[in-house]
Length: 117
Image (cartoon, rainbow, N blue to C red; front, top):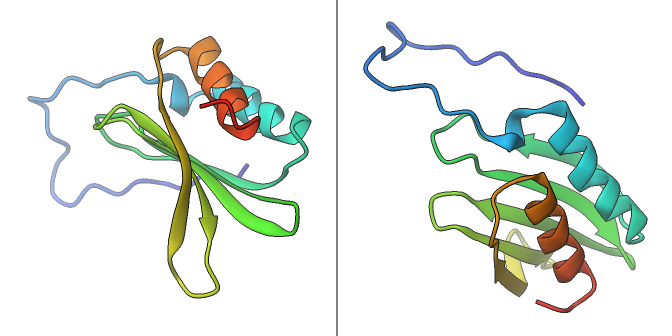
């Protein structure tokens, strides 16, 4: 997976504590993308936000449709969406994640991809 540098304009805020989220680790990325691949998805990419909430998304194709899983760390919900013919995305399903660790996210991804959310 490609990594990109984050550039701070000015100086990095020192008053904010650095939050560690599982989404920023290679192990987490491998776990959730492997879960998608095992469910028959052709994974395009995984993107983790460099923010305070630990948000991330996985883009993939499945059954000839472009889809994505989006974890909104601020709202605490995961959404499965499918691309429209335009630029929009239709929500297919959503779920809350009980435990915000790797196992909890893997279980939520499996649930959404199997249609059990």
